[in-house]
Length: 208
Figure 1 (cartoon, rainbow, N blue to C red):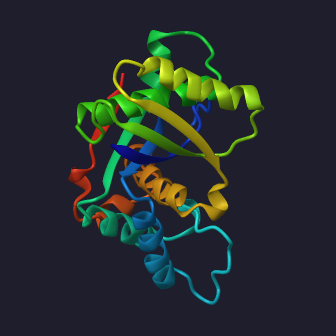
Figure 2: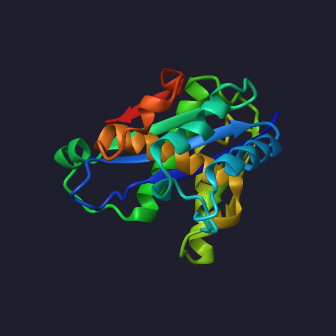
């Protein structure tokens, strides 16, 4: 089975003022489902005063973020999952510096493992990750795809990683809303989760 796995994160691993780093993924067989939901809700969210190009989660109200997530949770063809890394606990166990690129690769691998554990993706699936393009050189881009293929070589048929500009990629914007809401719940920076009817239907894996 070919599945899209659209990913985005909230928080920074190497900042001291926030305890949790979040990465979330949305899994679909047809990514046009996410595009159509985003277009539909965007019409409700945008106003004449809201002319920003990208509807980033950090720029819209809690109840507006919840509209996108509630619509996804009502659709049986869409699966959502999140990974929460407790940086304080991790730093207490391991006293060394981890680069943002390394922790992102690790977190994406653990998110994929969590999706397998929750049967959101299956053995021998072919996974196409949509991830936000970052300021990385080509070697770093290639290393992530190679790393994931090596990690899951005996489980998944193939892993492909496609880097997208989040400002024009609706699927990644949808993952941004999920990560932002989970981030707000754990770091207590927003209360968007209170507007989500089926918040308990989102599997969350906590590390460590």
